Length: 153
Image (cartoon, rainbow, N blue to C red):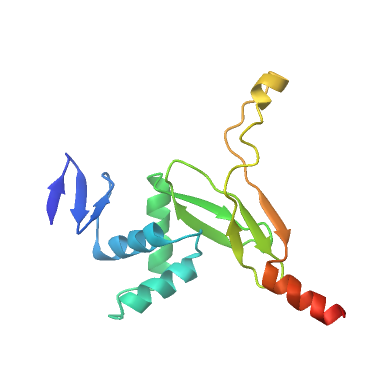
């Protein structure tokens, strides 16, 4: 393993953030989060890691401990889906995303931009500083909507 920068660790094409011990298990979890297209639950992360690493060195509790360490270092954002309360994690990439959630199949569709980008509450209220926000839209994806329409005919 080569060193890149004063503390960053590099493995293949991945540069791991400094400030944390990079075990094989942590690298695997980081890789899954890096490749994820949407936030994942600990169980989803476990299932993806187990598919690639079948040596039995992982347990769901290990995933939770790794995610807690990543959260403590500010590397991941933890949130819960409002629809079902599931805790999900995504890498902190310095930006945020919003989703439309299908009420039937639970598919999550990332919105292309932030609907609140133009809102300037600080200027409008003068006494409130926004530090973050969360938005989920609920409805039906095109496939589920078509299935619902067929049922109702």
